[in-house]
Image (cartoon, rainbow, N blue to C red):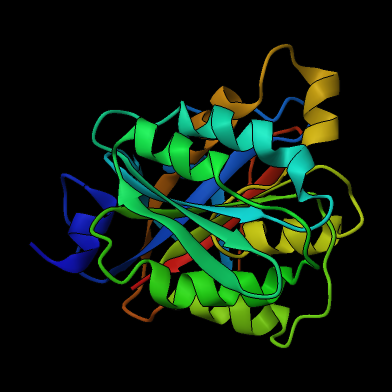
Length: 264
């Protein structure tokens, strides 16, 4: 079985002359994933050129989840959320925990053991200056090298960026090359536009904890994982790979958060 088939756990193979696009669609107001969409609901533009959507599948299967945890001076405010996210793992999913400040440090390698993940989280120390983009780049660059399933990176952050050496474009290129979807989860909205763009261009979704508290009861972990587990794979006409300027629109009324990740 090929790498892409393993990564997406899809039952079928793309038709000849078609390329694949991972797409996540979330209702703007509620934060819920939009389910039940068909090929006719989507419009795909590749650098403003329309590409026909030939089919849609729901991406199912196991996850390799990297929890990238803010350990800055204010990062402790998001630790309870990290614990709640650990509890959302299904039996054969795997999670790794990476702490970030001015660098990215592996705290716990990929495991299905919630107990090991809880212990690792309990030992995290806080009190550094955050460099979000540097940490993302370092985590993606080596963190998924042995990953066999769909790759999701949950960026759990207070929401502040320090002074990173790499830029946003470099992070996006690396994420797309490695088929990694980024899901920023943040407490304050200082870097909101950055987080939204990281999600939009990698097939992920961004979550404001403040907005979620207003719109729902209970902890946010179940809703976040509901979104993580609900992307579509679009089969798009043409042999040419989809470029960096691919845009997906939903042909139905409403306000949506739509993200896309071209797949090799």
